[in-house]
Length: 190
Image 1 (cartoon, rainbow, N blue to C red):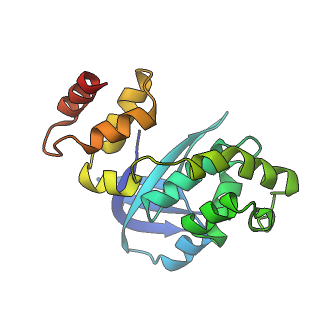
Image 2 (image 1 turned 90 degrees about the horizontal axis):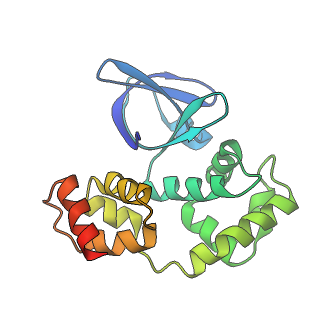
């Protein structure tokens, strides 16, 4: 899984940018706000999310891990695709999106092209419990402490463990350990 990239911008188009790193160019979809702020030859760092479609694989890039987390949540809602999820992130910050869900504000979501009242309500219904009962570790803080947090969490989720049981254990582990050592320590703790 590709989750982060740092490289030079070699192309910017209407909906994507291409970032070159290690002699490979990665096409990355991004919000209009991010695309408009980038210039050719800039060095950029982005958090990435890979979306697997029926016919293709696409990378989506974000300035912060919080944006990526919100994108993943929005994209998990039935009827909301990656384009609509990007559209929501184009008009609101992750915190504003959380507050809109908590406060049942369908207006924020219906202002995005392609999201009607039915899908806006579905977003609120499906995400409300995640935001109101979210007592988990802040993903940005966890990622800052453990650079390999995504790899550790992904590996353990493939073994059938839930993110909510992994993150608290990971936050209590020495960040100096290798990825394999962290996985072993979490398995012992669970």
